Length: 399
Image (cartoon, rainbow, N blue to C red; front, top):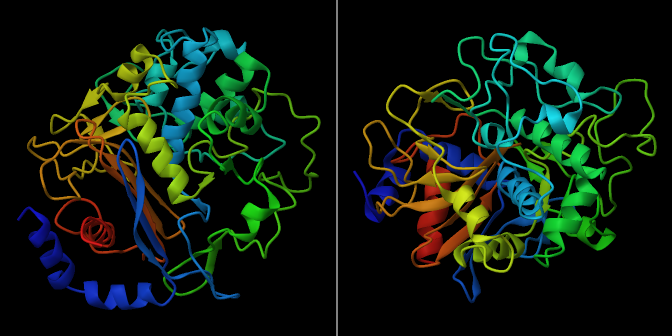
């Protein structure tokens, strides 16, 4: 079944969905905005951003947007490419000043293009949260960080968070600037966004309007800030102080969560979408925009897996830090809109939040949204996306 009516039917009749929706509704927050190249319009605004204070959520409230952070990080890479600081196809060892190699494929260089398109041979088996006091080099020495069966540059996609701490380390090493500050300078401020990674660079006003992430059972998952910025914006190794003064850029790009730690409002996320809808004009060169949005990989039925290691039809085409959805190839179920329209953007999933930034590059119309308190076992809808996400998209189209 396809189409909007079928999506509504999926929400109503998938076994267990009503029970899960009722549980989610106790603590859920949902915000969606529609946009085109010229305007941004609220579509869905419901719930309390902070259950303790009862503060209603708004389209200007920042939320941890999860993996959409990867797309924004990629914009930083491309800005550095356009400035001549980075090269997508150069061995990243040249920037890191130590040799990065897949242990089973030591003759194959690893490039930013491979890292950004999840074709580097890395996995999340060794974890991608690397605390202050450890280095990315130490983590990549763990054999579990690598896919023993697939090497860099193959037609094999393995969605991997760890790719982006490596990317951030390269960005830092090439510029001598810490990732959070670099992203403020070359991406967030030029786009006029009030956003930040791991709250570093955000204001106290932003902290006061933070969206607290709750699980479906009502427990806090993230960002219960109580109106104040966190005392330490990074994960610190046990027994070590939170002292970033001695940090050397390039040693640990995981610190500010380039893969998932962006805090941004839906109005600001829609501004990112508007820039993409305009073809990157004024922000990216045509060559970088083309590199961003051109598929580096397409699913052929057996050449890739998602975050959970399964070829579930969720990922069917991927560029550089950007997913292309609405593919009609066999085995693909990547159309949460149900209308067969190809779109670009990125989804997010973490800490009981589901999010999305999606736009049709032909018309320039898109949507930015998040919904919280989604159970880990949330029912799928008519696509490989959850019924909760599909439901938001239905309502955003018909607010």
